Amino acid sequence: MTDQHPPLSEVPPIRGIFNIHKPLGLTSMMVCRVVKGKLKSGGAPKKVKVGHGGTLDPLASGVLVVLIGKATKEQDRIMGTDKSYRAVVDLAHTSESCDMEFEPVPAEIEREPTIEDVRRVCDQFVGEIEQTPPMYSAIKINGRRAYAMARKGEDVEMKSRPARIDSIEIVDYSWPRLEIDIRCGKGTYIRSLARDIGVELEVGGMLASLERTAVGGFLLEDAVTLEEIGEPLDPWDLPTEGLDL
Image (cartoon, rainbow, N blue to C red; front, side, top):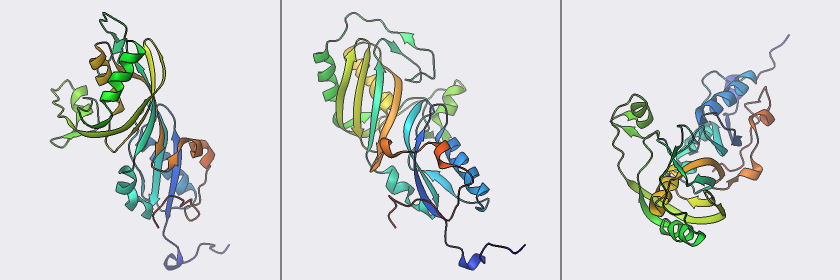
């Protein structure tokens, strides 16, 4: 049998991009490893690069932009694009992680906020704001991940940082459930926003669910599942739409 592969000097560079609908429960790097496995099944070298254009928490679903080969050079550009989210906030509970990773704790509530209260407070967070990231986040403190320190019971001092929120649209409010659409800039923590909305309303505040609906021009309605990508995946015939080639 003759070798059907062309000489290495004639092999084009591997580059590609996928708009993947990340499911609940997987980390962003787990998704990248699945894609890398499919590429290796299709003949890609073991060291083929696979990265993503912005982390999505395991308890969040939605758009995850996965970059392959030379396309990983565009990681910073894609990370810098605007994001959109659909969030459900539980205003009756708080949590150590600001989401469902930890057991929700009932909040002491003197009065249920009205829709007018909720609208006023949401409007306060639109624009350039200062935001303190959750203690259980991937931010590095002296070279260590904050979440790793927190899970070991170490003191974690999170410093506030600038964030930009372009809009918060109330989709539905039925106490204690608040559903909102958010458009924001790079580095905005929706878990922190849920917490801070609750603080301003003097109630609870934590994420009950989160879905990322857009990363720049990559939209949820156009995303594919990991199952739809198929295996083996031809590393020299990948989608490139959305790359700055």
